[in-house]
Length: 218
Image (tube, rainbow, N blue to C red):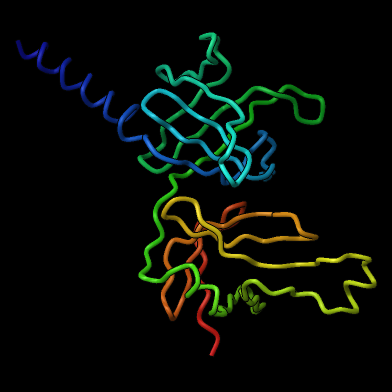
């Protein structure tokens, strides 16, 4: 009797961790090809719905790149063929392992995905765009000013570009992002953990520390 109850509890726990609790959106932070040099191939987002994993490579989420099926640590294609594996690190972190090649050598690419959480804020997108924040790292200051061309006219003419650098506030569901644009193209999008009238805390995705905080410019 005790053994039966134990098995039921184990099944309930497994289903809770591997299925229901994983539902939601997960954002790629970085990829490690096994040589200790982590990289960022661009925007990738997983949307998990029970055992289905929808993969997006465009910020608009208008079109799925592919769909996989979660099966006890394996990821299968729609033909039920194994394509890769995954490991649940925590309720907020999944590692996806994909076989490939790095410098012409066989490698296992370790992809770190983190759960996409709603931004903690009472502000609207339009409110955030009106503010300027300053990030200080290693005595270097970076300003976060939005919807403004950051290159002057002379630099644009010298580089023969119509657009240089711009930072934008964008949104997926209830999560705000700071998106970096270069030459009119999105370079990266960093999710915002929290934003108030005094500060903005961002998850450092892609590569870097897990969080960084910039303070309102006086």
